[in-house]
Image: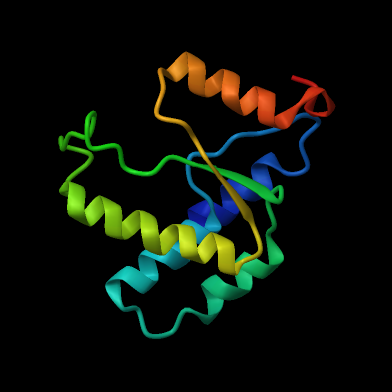
Length: 122
């Protein structure tokens, strides 16, 4: 997971315009902590070396729309726990988290664009 995350980072960095990622290298550290992986030094080092923009948009589990399926196997309580750990890792790594509002996908996209502002070039 770490190797794929680093490869994705390197493939998209530097970028001439903002790039959005569904997951980042700190997610790997969060998952490692969730499963109790003993030695996370390589992941921690990658989190220090490969930096994203300082602002990270997060979407906490939303019970009203949450469903499990063949890809999403966690129940809602597990999803909440995972979110809490991963969000804590991002904060520990120095990122500022902005929570997405619980709105339609279009309204969420508009919110993100508003947060980025004209300087983002979008």
